[in-house]
Image (cartoon, rainbow, N blue to C red):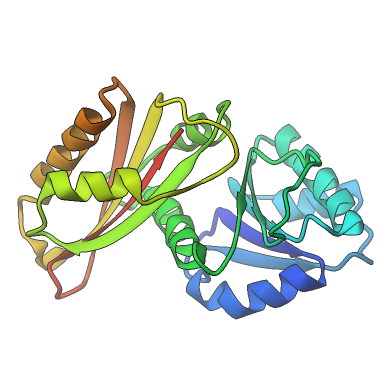
Length: 241
């Protein structure tokens, strides 16, 4: 992926330090920007920040009022530019102020790895060179809907029972505030080229098992990407609203 349509920005000193520790895990699929609270965040700056971007992740500490003011300015213009804007809050306290992001997740040591996997898999799933890619409109339907969004990520060998995997994806997840509506699901799959020819059949079985668990007519979309790896493994990110 030569062009990076995903950007991760850190606003405020705490978030900047946090991003420096994790950006090496994301740099293949995202560009980055650090914004200090002393920065003059005018319209011209925000326009430049959002140019060429489809998905923006904002990393911040919501307990800092100066940070919140900057976030509001950026998220407001992201909405005008129709950029999907996802908040990653490193403050463990409840955020009672509306920052204007499409969805907000609390980021901590327990969900950090899963969240980075989700960001990478979303970026790769949107790449038109991916074998079966997802459209930005599908992501927006998930993240801009009312209610919560949940996400889970699992990496496994392909001899794993598909019903057992579906149960793990369904039960072991992190989510934003609110209730899930069971209207839309995204399954983002990354497989090794060594896995063989039956991976799409397996993926379809997982999707059917997920629908059986929820007992709903949830609209399910999936992406499929192959990587040059020797291990016969698959990694799946499951997002739903």
